Length: 235
Ligand SMILES: *Cc1c(COP(=O)(O)O)cnc(C)c1O
Image 1 (cartoon, rainbow, N blue to C red):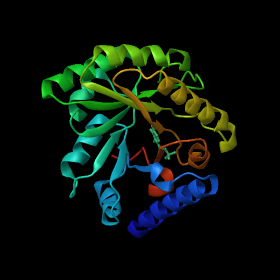
Image 2: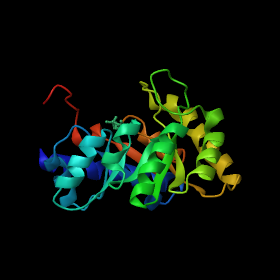
Image 3: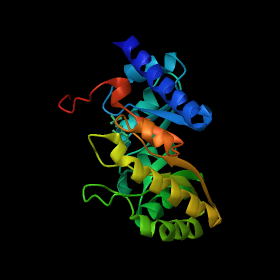
């Protein structure tokens, strides 16, 4: 089983590399985040054995506990919705917060970051397809939110955009979402907003990461294809 996880990771990485080559991108432009949420520390450590360094978690306490207990330091990304009262758990532990979608959340991050005198890298989460079930700012509102955060909070550094595309049978259905996100990133980048760099585009999961890479993702977040199905009935 442990070796299976390593094989799965290599397979996903190879698929990304091949996709990049096929469309003329450099494989090193795409970071693969192994989404380890709900999975035990031992699964993470199996990947550390083969030098994997980027992991994704969606629950603040779980990120904190894994960060504190893992046998070798690695980079943990906060990819899930964040409540303001839980920022303190991850503020100096997550390398990147992918899910900033309101001024209120940014303000709370600013407050915790200022206390620790650190600079926090974040992405703005966009609910591109405007699904009721999802967090994220509407695409039309992204620029204004970014301008407001960038001008108000000096402990926050906006590095790019993130989206969770709809769950679809055929990943091709999400191509317009990924294309639209890439265009939005370029549009915002062209505005050269102070204290904002639009260098990261976080999109693509197990079901649709190939299409996301084809459309310009620089970070893909893959869980199931690496660690297997998640069992939420444990514990
Ligand atoms: C769980 C999760 C993923 C990974 O999903 P898979 O379909 O298992 O690859 C990616 N991004 C976010 C925000 C998640 O919560």
